[in-house]
Image (cartoon, rainbow, N blue to C red; front, top):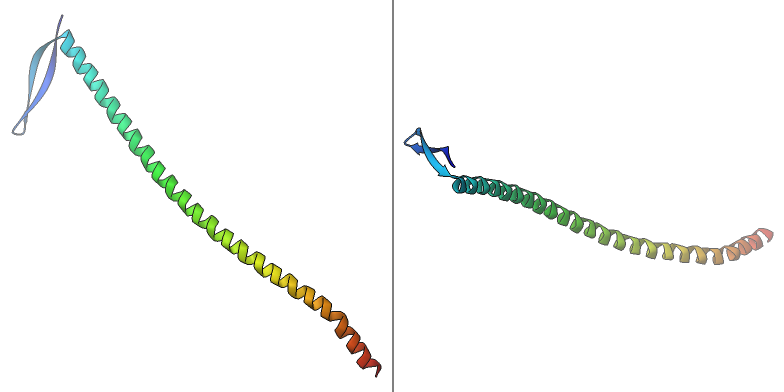
Length: 109
C-alpha cells in the first residue's frame, strides 16, 4: 500500500510542499527514525540533567569534607584547651589548701 506524505522544502524564504508517494517500509522507517531521534534527544537531556546534579553533589561533598576537616581540627584544639584548663584547675586546687592555711596562720598571729 502506498502512502502520501508531505515534505517541506525551503527555497529562498518560501516554503514549498512536495507530495511524495512512499511505500509502507519507507513510512515505517521514517516513523521509527523520528521516534528514536526523539528518544535519543530525551535521553541526552536526562544525561545532561544527571551530570549537572552529579557535579553539584560532588561540589557539596567536597565542601562538607572541608567543613568536617575544620571541625575536627577545632575539636582537637578544644580538647587541648580543656586539658590545659583541667591541669590549671588541679594546680589551683593543690595550692588552695596551702593558701588557706597560710592566711589562717597570718590571721592567728
